[in-house]
Length: 305
Picture 1 (cartoon, rainbow, N blue to C red):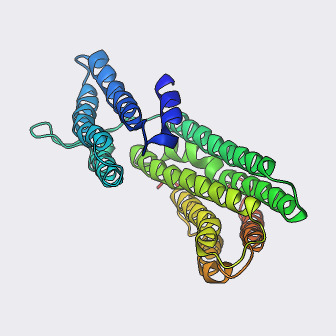
Picture 2: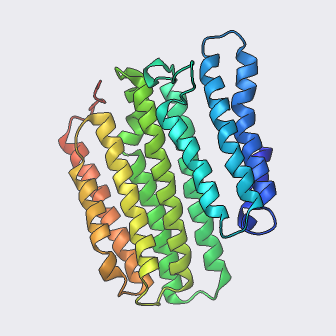
């Protein structure tokens, strides 16, 4: 917790004077956790998993620390390499010579506990979006357009919550519990929530841009952010619904496609109009969710697949 607080303090200045503090704290957190578990497990068979993670994290620590020492221009590339090492290790089971890799089907997980943690992170991301909405609205005088952007941005955040928890998000814990391969579904839930949280934070950046400049026209980056964030969110939720029910959520995929296709048009419109477009698509997807749930059995359970 203390390390996370230090990271938050250092993050705005990682390309300035706090790069060493940020990288050092990150490495300490990432390396300290599996190392502590490895020492605590002693002769337990599961110690092999944390041993592999410790070794891979130690390898990734080198470019993290080197990146803090190089120039600001080279730092993003070096740190991207460090992050790639961590994700490759996770995706491949942290293979080590002689020890081999940790296979997903060998993991023992508590699906309810795992998803509860992910849901807490998602709710924190929503809280971050709401905080951004409030801070952006308090920075400048509230014009009618800024007030409208404030209200719609909050509505979009609520729609994220509604779409996430509708059916698939609510039933993901029992789906993992009853799955024939709970660890593999748990692994996929990790990626789903990674994309979900990223999409919320991307959209929060769009909130800040639109609330600050609701009437600005003809800007491609805000349109990409404001429509791309919700599109990415819908893709992640479509993936979640497929994993839980083994059915293709056409309406969520269609919503993501409409948002992506609307980017060229959004680049020609005021920021407020782009925000309204995103909200309308999310309202339609949320309504389709309700309609689908009424057409299906009320006690529709996750697929055992």
